[in-house]
Image 1 (tube, rainbow, N blue to C red):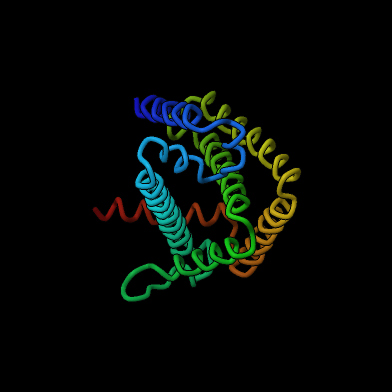
Image 2 (image 1 turned 90 degrees about the vertical axis):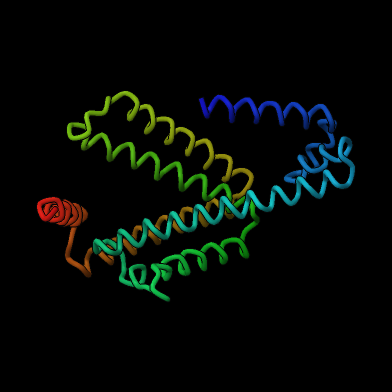
Length: 219
């Protein structure tokens, strides 16, 4: 139901924008198209209102992504899967990983155009979602999930990633190279950390399951 509502709103807004602004002009407006479309109906106030709403929604999305990523990094570090820097606390909060993540994001935003950063982020999310579905397939016997939605998720994510990466190679080649370099560096850091800790990913999962079992038996 929520997807239907979101889809309806998206289509309604898109139709309104196309109805207010000619297509030839829309191509040159870029990210400000929605604000310009609101100006004929609401005047300059509408332009300012939509611009402020866009800034707030962008800030909300960035905060949600940063805090979510930092929490995931903290949990992985707590289980020994990442360097201890992501597990340290400042002011009684688990925010050091957040600072590291935010610093890396700031570097990318300063070096690359915002559209390129968005493309790299989308590509990363697609790979993560594909990996999550693939991982779920391996434990499907424990969760009782059906196989076809998981296979569908993996295939769709991989196909969309291929299309997105192809687009980046054509339109934003430097960003595509940077994304590949980022993935490669992440993989090398992962190999280095596993070699340093002498623990495989399976061992980390076994340790997590053991802690959960101990906690469950204690309660």
